[in-house]
Image 1 (cartoon, rainbow, N blue to C red):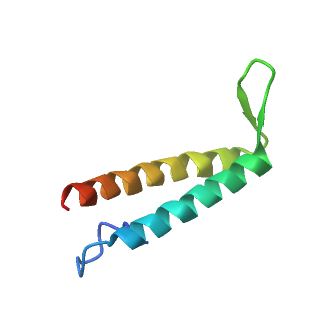
Image 2: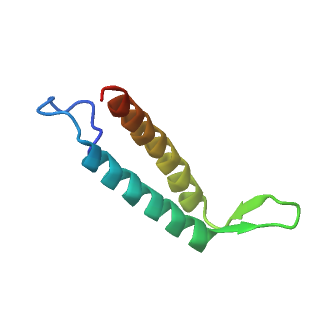
Length: 77
């Protein structure tokens, strides 16, 4: 995986790789949201699949990591 901390550091992750990773994560999150998530009258959210909800939550954590790495690389410029 792109952000595997156990891999030997061969080269720093480029801005392009970060952008591509963020785009793919966002696409998958949008797909999960459209297929498995619904809103109720009180403004809450209901998931029809516990697996989809769990994957969505995991992707949110990955997205946070990617954005943090983007900000870190932007500070180095």
